[in-house]
Image (cartoon, rainbow, N blue to C red; front, side):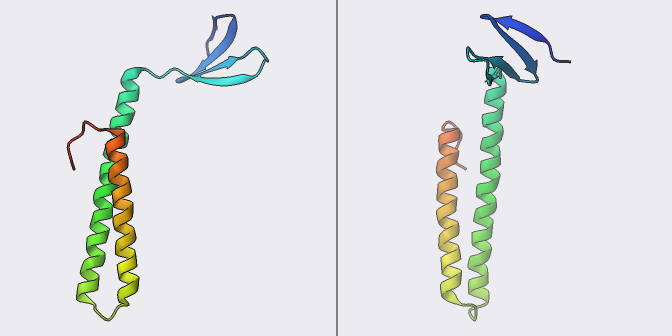
Length: 107
């Protein structure tokens, strides 16, 4: 059952980590009450997820390169475009990883 609290003359109801408050116009808006420790944990988990995604993408690019070497009859232009696109996406993923968690060691 949601508990009601009064803070700065506004009635708010707590549901999990979200507080619903009424502003001066009477509309409800969200106010997140996430602890700093939980926020750090979420950033760390997101960084781990990006690491998994980056390594999986590099694995797919490597498989494409192997297929191109083993089966030269496959259209070369199509394989090269897929490899190039995979490398571009992996660079973007790596840059995002660095922005999310700059203190993490290079993966």
